[in-house]
Amino acid sequence: MLVNLKEILEIGKERNIAIGMFNATGFDSLQAVVAAAEELNQPVIIAHAEVHNVYNDISLVGPAMVAMAKKAKVPVCVHLDHGTSMEMIYRALRIGFTSVMIDASALPYEENLALTKQVVEMAHAMGVSVEAELGRLVTGEAGSGEEMKNVKAEDFYTDPKEAKVFCEETGVDALAIAFGTAHGFYTAEPKLDFDVVKNVAEATGLPLVMHGGSGVSEEGFKKSIANGIRKINYYSYMSKAGYNAAKAVIESGKTSYLHDVEYAAMQAMKEDVKKAIKVFSNL
Image: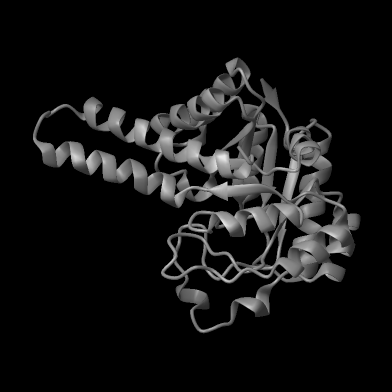
């Protein structure tokens, strides 16, 4: 069942859980995520990240995402993750995505606000939800943190007062915040500032989003959810599970067919997604 972000996060609020968002970089991962959600009978968000467009263009994978969401037995939101260009946002809206993220967090505050407001006005007119970001993670969506390796993460944490004004002026449906997570693989357990989550949630009254969810401990997830996180972005460790399974099949020498490798990767990703959803949903 295809729903928008606002609708699926309302489910999270009612159940006091977080909805998992998983990037679908291809048809194998798309099948893995939807199958995992259906097996657990839990809502899910499938996403196409602009940075991943090089692997599967949105014109190809996007319609498949929408089609799978419509036929799914559980609520599914189709989301554009980290949309940084208006061109990609336009493409997602035309294809039928029910949620878009405008990521202008690297821009000065006033530019972020103005651009986000523009996207909200356009998307809301089409019944599409909008996620924005305030504050910055110390790594980019692709996992490289070179441009910020010499800065302190807390210097970029989301400010509750600023978030309140930002959300009121833009009308966004969800806000991604910075409170200690990072994109990509962790070399050490992240130190999360749950007070930031609590204070921003109270100031804005909106469902909050955790980016860089892979690698956070189960306790970290649960405390984040208890303080107001309603959407958790999870990709890196799902992808790693698929990679490890594919590598094992190749090294076994039992097949020379790519479809055997892809199928093993898909099954491994599905199981990893199920583990994540169970934690996010308190199952």
